[in-house]
Image (tube, rainbow, N blue to C red):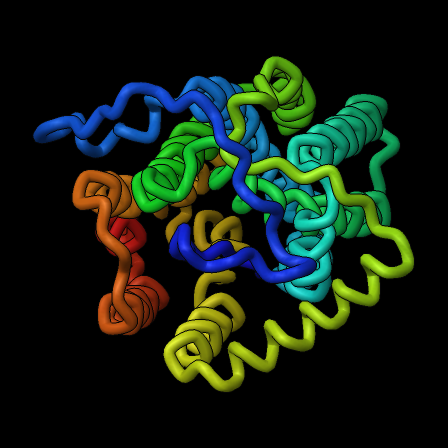
Length: 357
């Protein structure tokens, strides 16, 4: 997945790379002391506006994730089918995010985000109609999961690059940590509410709430002031631009291959994402067949997964420091050990603590 790395202001922008930064009237410098240091990126109006809507949308997204997994379990009670639906949703992100990142460099990122959010809202409404009418079938979930994955392969690279445009490079480390904090907060609240709704009602309401949750972020994107963005691009992919794009892609892959630090991080993170982090796909089976806590327990297990991450990312936002390879590798090692212990746990409170860890 494409990530954006800060560069010095003295370095020229490579041809075919990110557009040059456009001078803007910057907000008064807010350094912050103590806890306020964790929120300095919020001094940017566009950033505050966008993420106020994004948090609501993410809560709906994680609610649908819980509802979709529970629906697959109700239809099939098969761990294989749970894994297949999850794979169809995330495989396009794995395969096409690199190209989505290049496309995000060629088109205005705000426009990409608007289009992808509208497409995701339409898919959510369609899923709600199928479930509410009682006509939903397993193959519907396959197709909609694949379409959502394709949408996210464009959305995820664009939103990462758009953060730079909203806050500038000086506040980028703080904004990146806050982004993850906001996302983690949504992952705590969304699944918890989803589990309770399933327990007292059904999954149908979850899909409707998710469809409606896209409205705040779409409105926020429409209200963003483009003249206050720190970088803008109006390039469109013509024949010459696509040639430059493929050249940039080859150069980027070559740079990663020759830069051992980047290669180590990409390989390590890729292995953890491939073999480790996807255990959440099987949480419905853990909740029902192993821990015997039902839908509400499944929701709280999913929420607990993000509790520890929220505290750690708030600390990262407060410190406003770049991570090191040693920290990344150590975190992955601890993650693996805790996951192994969770796999053999049969005690619900202990499982909650292990997931939070």
